[in-house]
Amino acid sequence: MACLAVSAILLGSLAFLARYNGQDTGSASSLAIPTGTTVRFAHIGDFGSGSSSESRVANLVKGWNPDFVVTDGDNNYPNGEASTIDQNIGQFYQSYIGNYKGSYGPGSATNRFWPALGNHDWDVGDQPYLAYFTLPNNERYYNVVFGGGLVQLFVIDSDGHEPDGNTSTSTQATWLKNALAASTACFKLVDFHHPPYTTWSSGSTTVMRWPFPSWGADMVLAGHAHVYERLDASGFPYIVNGLGGEDLASFGSALPAGVTSVVRYNLDFGAMLVTANTSGITYQFYSAGGKLIDTYTQAKDCTGTGGSPVASLSPTSLTFPSQTVGTTSAAQAVNLSNSGSAALSITSIAITGTNSGDFAQTNNCGSSVAAGSSCTINLTFKPTATGTRSATLTVTDNASDSPQTASVTGTGTSSPVSLSPASLSFGNQVVNTTSAAQAVTLTNSGSSALTITSIAITGTNSGDFAQNNNCPLSPSTLAAGAKCTINATFTPSATGTRSATLTVSDNATGSPQTVALSGTGITGGGTLPRFGHVAVVVETHYGYSSVVGSTSMPYVNSLISQYGLATNYVA
Image (cartoon, rainbow, N blue to C red; front, side, top):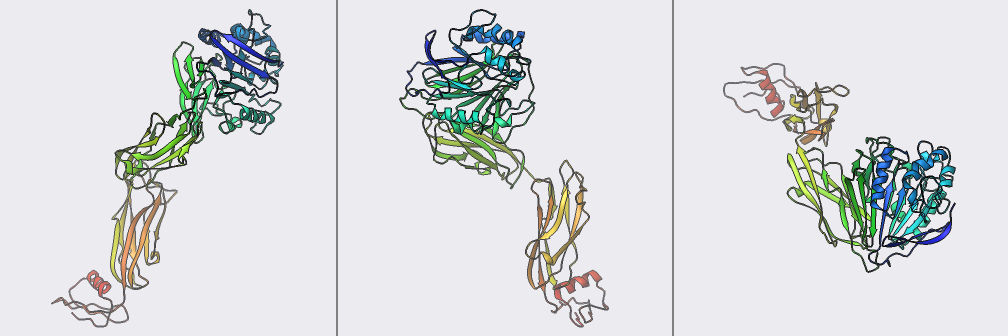
């Protein structure tokens, strides 16, 4: 069980402090660490199978000669039994295990193996695990300080069997929150088994989405998913490392909004080498064959001589889906992170470049971003023309590599649905009489069927206009390449200019489509023009009973519409 000790360990040229004092949070003074202090450790996960794959990974790890080894669980497959634990762990890592009593040679004079419990370690209960290791605190969750406060490791138990709970309000979570708050270590790393975020095919463990950034953590390391993946959650990094030797898994699940998968790998087993010094910490994942797969660095000044901001944008490029000209896209987010040790002062956040007017941004960054914090920039796309449109998000600040930039692109398209003509004018029409119909053609020039939700007259004088159509309404559809007709009429209810809009709502980009409608209401009466040889006689009572002359009925109707009705007009 936990021992009460403070041990100074000399490994090569590095003297580092491993402190664990029962329930003590293990806080250590940072920002007073001698320049040149370095901590190097290996991180493995889901490894304890006793297989040749585990052997390959162990050989990779031992070739680095790390100061210590950290695991994220599933140390003893398949069921966490006492009968298999030594062959699955000690066979490969006994030289790092303190108080080692196994069968594979001498252990370490001081413990240099820091495991976490996984679900397979809990299968028969935690006693085989607790009996095999000598760890701080209650041994299920604990913390250790290295390099005189350069790095502090917080190992917790994410399994549902944990007696002190695995929710963000549990006894265990309260312990972690308080321990992080008390820590003055330069780099605070939280390690456990089940990943809060991953695109592993079996998905994330949502119960472990604790507020690690606001509690003061710098990094979360997890496993369970037999893949390697580095993720960004609104500027905070998560690493999933489950390729220690059990088997390889696939990707396939989705992530929540604001979380991005930055790097993914599942082609071979491997391990991660973590190197910390007084200017930063670097995480490097290698395949078992020695190929470098990913490198990620967090910069911070740990010497107490002052610091500087380190700014980055994630992602560094955005591509918007095709967008109809004149319409606005949904927003896409870019995170601005400051991983440095001083506040980032922001001079400006702007859209620049060729088509800068087609993009817009809003943000919650303010004038500065604190060290270790981030903010969000939301961008939208409203193309002013068809074709490819591009610009650059530019952040100007006091970081050494200012400005930071992210490219933004999108494609402007014309709507696949059109109404022709775009406007109808009915001219003069006697109040309370109905005009001849005028036709509007609705064309679906897209490559898929169009679902029309409604066709309606809207606007100021919508009651003065009417429509009928032969268009198929939902659930029926208008086939790709097909057309239908909408006939509009005008019946003014008052004199003067009257206007409304023919509105078609559908599932096409740019919906609704509209046609402007206008006409003028007039009263009856007036003077007919003279036409020479044509005589027109119109009876009274706002109608006609006979027409004398050679002109046609449609023409007579048009005269009536234009000049009104009167008694015995003669031209």
